[in-house]
Amino acid sequence: MLRFLAVGLGVALIVLLSFLLEAQSQTPVPPRVEADTPYRIFAPGRVEGITEEVELRPQIRGQIVALKVKEGDQVQAGDVLVQLDSKQYEHEIALAQAELGLALAERERIKNGARQFERDEALALYHSKYAELELARVANERLRKLRVQSAVSQQEADDQQSKVKSLEAQVAAARARAELLEAPAREDELLIADAKIEAAQSRVELAKVELSHTTLRASALGQVMKVNVEPGELTGPDAAEPTLVLVDTSRFRVRAFVEELDAPRVKHGMISTIVADGLADQSFTGRVTRLSPRMTAKQIWSDAPNERFDTKAREIWIDLDSGENLVVGLRVDVTVDPQL
Image (cartoon, rainbow, N blue to C red; front, top):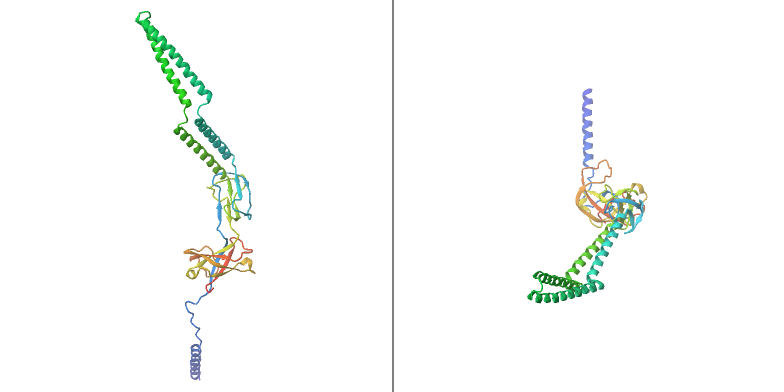
């Protein structure tokens, strides 16, 4: 009896296996997907302004006396953002301007020459010395004749001769001074005076430039993203943190990070759709306008369970058609459609 049961079970198993094999052989094979069939590209990204963050620092070190903006303010190019203490530089301008005035006056004095009363005084001195010389010459001639007759001593004749020579030298000096005061300014003196004026003018301009550095202005249209200082603090070009951070938020774009498998497939002009967890009822569209020429370390992750953290990514930039309610730095999910 048991023998017949075993045989029956074996036959039943064989029949069952044959049915299963037949059913499997009749399962339809799915169509093969062509390798070049386009599919959408998904990538994490973040919202940026039309420009990246611009870090601003004063060009000189100084104490902040006025902070003109706060975070979130919109500013125009040239708007004053921070004012540093400027007293030292104002005094330097005043000193440089005084030196310039002195150089101009010196040149004018050289150009105009001596004053008229100085010229008259020099001429009068010349005539006076010349008259003394003539008298001395007459006396010298008389003594010479008397000496021939031995009417005067040799010492008296020699003394008179020395007086004549002394007066001749004094007359020459007086004449030279009078001619000098009457002469026009020399070309080399004017060139030296002009050089001094140019140097003084350059010091004035340099002092003005240094004064301008005490005012930190907006370099372009933008929104104040971050303020890292308070009035009374010291800041400067070597500060650890920028004084302010600006971003142009007149338009928005998204920087996305496309993984290696999809990186070669992204092209300029592809239409993209952007969504954010915080804006579940909104989606944004834009086009790819810039592609990085190289792969870099991935900077944003989607937190998907199967995501690889050691992959490289290609940065792409998408200019958005509109950006209402978007915030700089907001994480978003990007879908790029290669078919469009």
